[in-house]
Length: 436
Image (tube, rainbow, N blue to C red):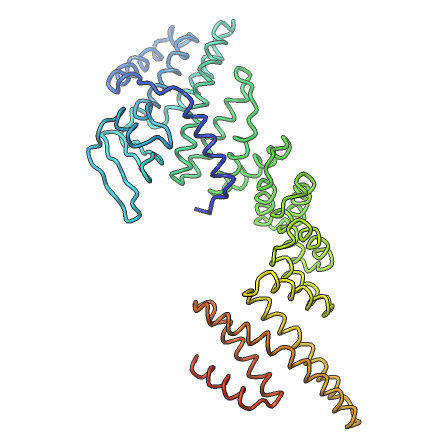
């Protein structure tokens, strides 16, 4: 599972709280519902009764009861104490290495984390797809109710059904079954938009897209993300996620236009700005990327990453002074920012190499020596920053940092060799040997 943003967690908790506001009740027993379904199956086989809208309406509500028979008293986030009030003590409790508990009952298993209900799995059901069956029956009732005598009751039943889909979607989501969650959200949207209900819920439309995206059903994700944008859903992550979807389809132009639309709707959102900058960087449009970097810095002036990227861009377009300035600003914000030390040293090093090449073209020995001194001074400027990059990388002591340690030592070895700094060269050479 991809990491869920804080916004998504908070929003899902809001959705759960809405669910929790409904009164907990008990419904018909499992055995009585089995008998009612058996009777209903015979009823719809009757040529006369099967043409009655009332028959199908009753069957629709029956399937709703069947859908809830094992979980009617459950809601996500309820306490272990509440669960035991309704379901009594579990038959068995299994605990995994992370401390998550599985409470085993006759027909349902509950996942408990930190004393609260995270989700459930039904292990014995009367019908595998009761909500889908219920919707089929409602549509059949609508079709047969030519005089619209049952319009109100059908509408009330559909409202209940869409909330059952909501409950199912949340459970599937927290169990990381994104395909199930997406299908449940889509079904809830379809019911909401029926004329008997007629509700537009932009939050659910967004989550239908998000869960479809999570399970890599990009075609469905695109539909619902676009609908959410058309409805002006108030969430910046909508635009960044949709842009990633377009990028996965190699449609960079559409990704960029989506991000710019998001930027116009949320000009203060740094996340959208960063994605725009990254797209321009990947397209080698450094000048345009710099324009957006400036906007990003205005919104978050203490973000070291902006100055680091800015330094990289200025180096790429050949503005050494600005590049040095940006890297130094990043270091000022974070004195342990190893990447900025490393890149700043390389700016001086690469410039020194160019100056050396210029000196080597001189035929006049005096001028050559003068230019070589200038080049050597530039090499010397790189040393303290590369030494700092080495020191920080070494202190981190991770497999990834070892790459930086070796790169820093290799560069220092060349610097000390060029500048004929014998004792320092011997030290670095020994460090490299020990590292190897």
